Amino acid sequence: MSATPILEIRDLSCAIAGRPVLRQISLTVAEGEIVVLLGRSGSGKTTLLKTVNGLIRPDSGEILFQGQPAAAQDPIRLRRRMGYVIQDGGLFPHWTVEANIGLVPRLENWPPARTAARTTELLAALGLPGAEFGRRYPRQLSGGQKQRVGIARALAADPPLLLMDEPFAALDPITRFDLQRQFLDLRRTVRKSALFVTHDVREALMLGSRIALLKDGGLDLMLTPHEFLAARTPEALAFLSSLVEPWRAEPVRDEPASTETGRRE
Image (cartoon, rainbow, N blue to C red; front, side, top):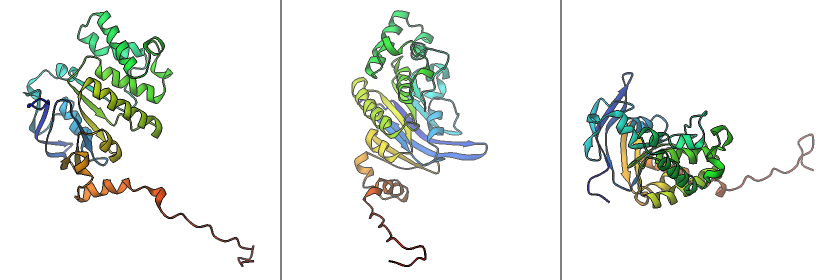
């Protein structure tokens, strides 16, 4: 890993409509690292993600991207260097899969042949052969296939950082687990850094290099998955309690049959 973090957030605070949403957040993302933003609804996860690529302007603090202040960079150029993945892929419905994936490369004036080759490469890596899926439209895809295309689009121009906002949350458990494993396999190949939002502690433990736990807009703790399993803050314990397997609880015993009058035979 590089000695300089690809992303550094320093004492970031943000209020929306006068309500504090982020409170003095500081964290780093190293090259090749997945930092998971874990927290309950309303804890500030998505807001923090949007401040990173300039969709929301913080009230105080600083964001450094590749060692340079993000606020001093052209916001459009900045966003094109950060692949963004949301639930359901966020695909343009009137564009084909090929057109959706090739969006940023076209904006960056890649030659058509290079864009087509990159699209084919990514579709194959994500288990969607280009000859079969490239000319389909989003309405012709399953939820899992849309999400794969969304990931391919985020990777198309080879950005150094991925921003992922609960990308697998809307999927059924089996498809979700399959995509989680596929994302890990893909990450080992492309070695991308990522800031990954989730409220699922299992997903955080599976995917994260480190877990940043947010509570009420502040950073409760930031630990490796192994360290997180031993964490003892109240918020960490609340998330860890959800790992208890409910099917191991003592089964409910059947009540004995009774007559219509309520007396046992």
